Image 1 (cartoon, rainbow, N blue to C red):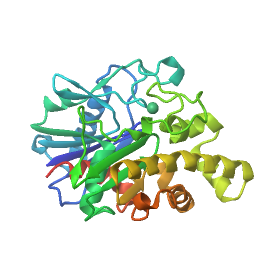
Image 2: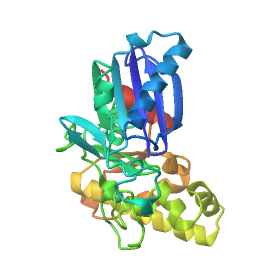
Image 3: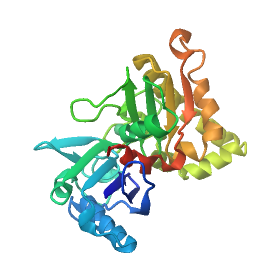
Image 4: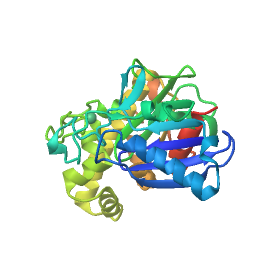
Length: 308
Ligand SMILES: [Zn+2]
């Protein structure tokens, strides 16, 4: 048996699967552990796997392979991945960010390796990119990206048919790039002020505009002028980031997912495309934005895609 784990800044989800083509079974999800010692997330994953096995009547000893798709960035300690995820580790940006811990990292791969013979950890956007290339909207494309617009902003990149990883497995952290000087006061969990994630991520929208992203987009869709102006500004920031990816990497297709995008995709997709279309046509005219083919299940399939 294999366990498929999706770690986000908001939720942790775990499913089991008999092999990489079987349906996911026994899915359990709960808020990401953020209190106690910095192995809390790893212990939460182990507990969820055991709970699913008990519920499904599966011998826990038969689970030997674990794929972990996680919000990054990562740091390597003794060759093993630890999370340095801004929305989980409160020590990175300090008390101003308001997380209930002072972790600089959360250990992940080491505690799992003590229990399972095969553990593969990838950035969630990279894993989702692999899933979208295998089963979703990026099938047959060698120059592509997956972008998640959710609690945070993540990117997975593939150029010339090769998925990009980088020196610490952190390729694709364009959410922490700067595209605007709109608001230097917006603090990202990574410690930057005014980067893309600080300006447009789901958690940032709630803190900057005093209302949750779903309420803001509902007001914009209803034509409320202030909400429309705010969401147009958010699309300008995200659209610039997407344009920069296309211009830098000569991409043909970008698949988009994540809760903020997914629940507002009819509203957002044309506005994001408008930030790209018409700019430097030689680079952009053959590039398209599409909704994730795997939809809201991309996170679950992301972990499955890591286990061949
Ligand atoms: Zn950042």
